[in-house]
Length: 227
Image (cartoon, rainbow, N blue to C red):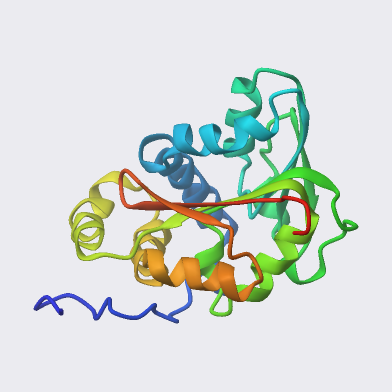
């Protein structure tokens, strides 16, 4: 059902985000600050930690893909019960300049990941998958790197978060790029059935999709024998 005055949210948008097409470095820095704010207050960080922790209870290695300034892997490291090693991967060097000291930064494209199969115990991707029109190859690539689990956190596409974003993003976010891209991201997000279908097409029918407040989807694909 369409709501008057809103874009059609029945299908994922393919509109590109400004950060994916290129913006001045000053806007990148401001936008990364906004992303840290969003991750802290609207990012379902505790649910992400709860999904990751069982697979790193005794320590291990974590790869966060599309990490931006790596605030999320730093948050996870600080709260895991045992020491872990974290790598933050992003395609843009500018995103990694303020990476926390405890996270090792790596510049690389998800289409050419510089790691052999099963390199990390856990692979995470937060607000990353929606940047791609074709998500199935991305899921396959990320799962190949995980010895224990792949954990994906992304946006639940729906009317309410879009109304919220349209009203409050201009008041809460410092960067014009963040305001624009935040709304585009909401239109590029997923319905639960869409995300489940993508995991199944990627050969991961055992993945579990959870709805998280506020309007997040958390997908967990645990590696078992034979997967």
